[in-house]
Image 1 (cartoon, one colour):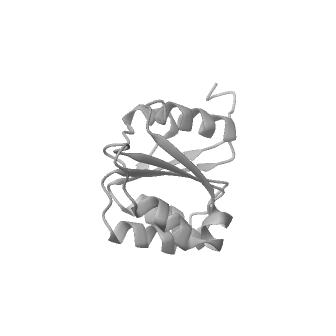
Image 2 (cartoon, one colour):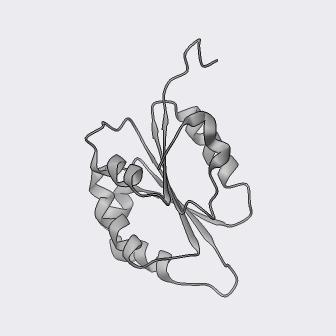
Image 3 (spheres, rainbow, N blue to C red):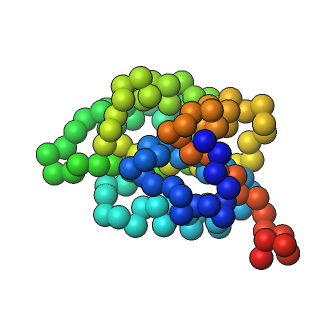
Length: 136
């Protein structure tokens, strides 16, 4: 589902388990992540490179449940199309207690990652473009 950057208040981590934030406006992306993760839930930060190098460790952290924590928020930075297989694996396991926020640089319309998030109704996809005089 495509959401405009000014409609961020429509996003809910309970409703949208996977959220893709992409574009050149990193300040706005970081502000959005801070607003989404205000609630006190365990937050894990990963880089795409770390996940691709050691997928077993990543899946272990996601699929193991803790007695003390009900939910987890996972933030994946600098994502590209290479990580799409990881999302398909997570999607096949239907995890209810995990929310994933993915950040990326500019993604073209042909990007497989972008189209994967845009076509799925429970996923959210938000583009953050540089500020202009009109948006300010």
